[in-house]
Image 1 (cartoon, rainbow over the protein chains, first blue to last red):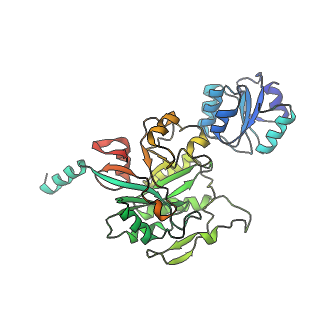
Image 2 (cartoon, chains in turn yellow, purple):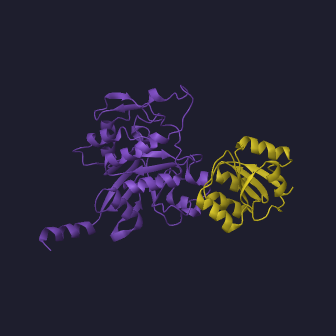
Length: 112
Length: 261
């Protein structure tokens, strides 16, 4: 599934979208970055309520397809700057983390 | 230079090893045992051979002044502070020299504690404010067991502005430690030092968590009951027992240093 389809389906607000022509192979939802580091797969779209700059570091390390900050939470300025610098797709949405995860699941994504 | 000022200059360059346990809860914290009253905390610190302790209840410093008073004449320096819970859920040890500084942070913390539906917070009657002899004064009505809405950067900036030091608490602990929550120690802000829990040694921490780098590591008891006080401590080589000296020790200035016991 392409990132563009997910962004459209979930009506995500792009904060940084170098390209939406990215293949998304799985999904993950967690607010513990250590848990994401340990369990999320390369190519996953990750939904979280964290807005700290380290979320971009995690996305780079795991080569994630993109990051969604859920629940109407605004990312820190340095988080946005880092996403731009590292070319990490970053989206925000008013939708709750629970609902974002549910919608990703409905689209057919799994965490494994 | 007068003889007096010369002596002061020399004194400032001479360091003393101080036994420090910079993370002690009182009975104000809902998780703190009822025995954690000022005179007994000071007595336990004396028995443990501590030279400097810090009082760090969750999101509050309402018992810190009482412990400072209880320690008068004991030879033990008490630093007032609190353990702030950031919006990310990170526990952050925030320490000061004067009670007024801690109270300035407390005001911001109280203003940003997250709200719950009325009546849903059930810890108020486990949050005891006491006097220096340990006598009951009142219940603390604030929701101090909950997180604040301040992120870690805001806590750091506020503490720095007031002249305190922020040390992430028990960085190895799951759920409340900075590494579990943020995956690694962030590059910014410029964190002076890190605290580890009793479950790990400084050497193990540096191996397990490479992002710790060469930052100084503090071992404190995080005591919630009397017998825990001083079970872990850190030896601070400083000219005086205050927060700016702790910061200098973290940076290794003028022979000052943070030594693991």
